[in-house]
Image: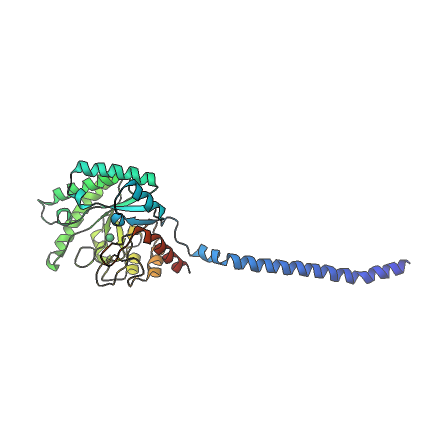
Length: 324
Ligand SMILES: [Zn+2]
């Protein structure tokens, strides 16, 4: 009996082992299937983990695309997916009184905040009357006094970045060096003023014969003026690619103006309409560690009936193309 039982048990052993092996096999197979499914499901996430638009790049736009600054419009802007804005001062306010400008700034700050929009930046008005590269020492103090008023107004709206143009145009080669020198003197004074106010001033790269029309020249202008950052305008570079500019000026970029062009002149088109390779521009901005907002500066013209509502879909398509 005993031996039979043993035999039987012994005989059953291989069966049991086979059963266990089979169960283990099934379990292993299930695990393998699960791992495969898990890996397949998460692969895009892993890829995105490596290649992701920085969280801080909130969608923003220059206020030129706003029909007005009423609370209703600001709510519509926010509803369209825009979180940040840059204020472009309208001519009637630039030509108005300081009191008008201050009232406007206070109201805009209140209404934009209520609508959930951050006034990320303001653009100091430009033109002959506000040209910081003015070489006449008699005229410069009044120009700088006016610029300082716009810095004060920016602080009233608690903006993060202030954008300023280095010059007007045209600039002949014969006076370029003296205009650069005057611009540097102005920037040193403005940098000291911004330091006392806790403001962040940024010099914008410009096209054609304007000052700062290349990465080399903007760095030359800012040499030794470390407090001033750079506003990278993607459609202003006519002598180098936007991505090469970004890599050259690197960490000095604190804010951006995003739009497309044909490399013949500035156009302020929506990305995709011109010749810019946006994957390269976005990669360069990620590479230099840009942390600001993704601020569009598309301009509405007769042939481009842009609306602020076009921006979110445009930004989404840029992000998707870059991630993939
Ligand atoms: Zn610009």
